[in-house]
Length: 177
Image (tube, rainbow, N blue to C red; front, side, top):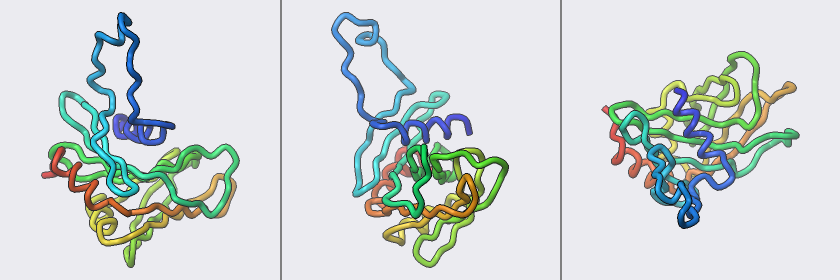
């Protein structure tokens, strides 16, 4: 779980996949970063990357929110991420960009499918990642509805353009059971 959250951190950073070129003669020029994210491609609006975790590849695809229904001062990046680890089922999460105390529920709507999520801290997690992946592959857009920090709800819209191709790549690199 901790490294899944790290995957979200990579996804929500300003330029998560751009590697800096070390200066000649620097220690960084000679050291490799085995756990650093590695860009695998872009499919429509989705970016795909992987990193190493305990000697195994963790593959993930992510997209930033297209729009939000409310402006929340100080809100961080809002990112939808699908993570695939070898021999595990897909995990789907939304980095909300704000903290919600306690454990609440929310949902994503993808086509006709309403997908239940639970909120923990600054993230929301799909109760069933496989169902979410199937719904995402069949839709053009998904809408996330979660509690806002000071009451009410916030709705974020995410593009699913390119999702099917992005998921195919992460599924191939880190196949589920």
